[in-house]
Each structure stands twice: as structure tokens, then as C-alpha cells.
Length: 140
Image: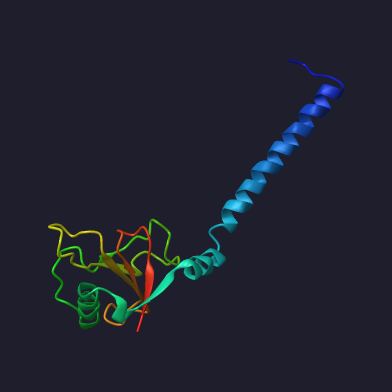
């Protein structure tokens, strides 16, 4: 349909507004994955002392530092951080380990996730008792 006069100007204006809004959305999406996001994530993670962890978690932590052997096949495998609750790192930085739960028959929900270049000397470890819904950073 052929538009003339003020309708053509309205259409151009509307097109510019829509383009500007789309560009703004792209900028916001890029900013939400910036390194500041990682700092904000780390600030939201609670801290727990190693001695406050359940006995099974302390034993799993000791196994991690000694290099195993681990009781579960998935122990030591890469943790993808798909929940994005831990600070952003490259694939393979985090490793997951099962914390045995005496009252369940399968692996249960408790995990320790450690990150770092050396498996036996991780930079930091996190404890989750709710299958990655939340984490606490483990401190000595």
C-alpha cells in the first residue's frame, strides 16, 4: 500500500523506535554476562566453615585433596555450572563430587563442587545440600 504525507513519516519514526529498542535489548543482554556478573554471583554465595559441614562432606573434601579414590563413578567429572550460581569460568574448571547421604540409596542431593587448575589443590570449593539449587563456599 502506498503511504504518503504524515503516514510515511510515522512509519519511518516507528521503524527507528523499534530498531532502537532492539539495540537496547542486545546491549542489556551483553552487559548481563559481563565479568561484573561473576563478582555479583560470588558476593551472593554464603560461606561455611569446613568444620561446620556434615561428617560425610568433610570426608569427601579430604578425599578431593588426596586425589581419591572416590566411591561414585561421576565423582571428579566436569561440572557445567548451567545454573550460573557459581562465578563464571571456562568448561572443565569446576568438578563435582558426591557427598554420601546415609538415608538415601542413590547419590542423593549433596555435592561438593571444586574449581581450579589442579584437582588436588583447588582454588575454592562449594557445598550444595540441595542438588545445585544453592551453594556455600567452603573456608578452612
